Image 1 (tube, helix red, strand yellow):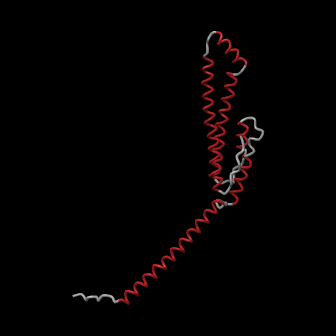
Image 2 (cartoon, helix red, strand yellow):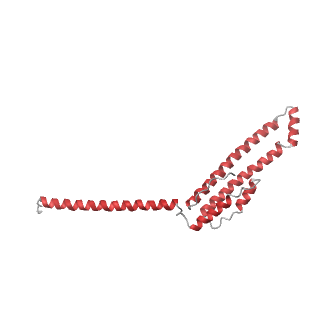
Image 3 (cartoon, helix red, strand yellow):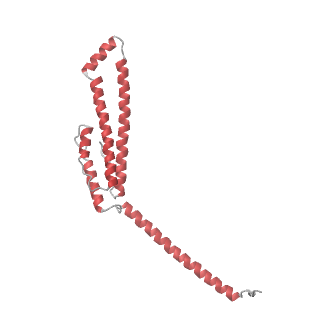
Length: 193
């Protein structure tokens, strides 16, 4: 037969309750300290992200140099092709790989805009030249309006291509800025291009 335990007396219960209360209080203090450390750690992480803790100082400097050179690529340019050539001349060596890749994608977006510019030049030479005017005049005399319909369709295609390419230029540069920001580089105010 198992020995029976006697019920605890009041002093044992009081001692056990005090020990349990002390234990819970010490846990609260520890969890409060842990919470303070966690909050402090989050504050430090946010401060590093906001004030340039991402990447090395060299990364930040190189990105700033590339963005400064990029901001001048359209100065005095007469064509998109000139802008693209200047952008391609910017050395992204020494930049973080993700930034260099984002900048290259931005150059590709500008190249698409250059393609639209070439389409527009071809349209102008086909439909807005002196010979096009004479052709349209003589066609109009014989009630042949196909050239006008064709011109409108081509113009709509070029407009759609321009809208798409312009949006891609804007979106790709926003990505460049996001990557730059991850290295602590603050975006400059937008310039008109």
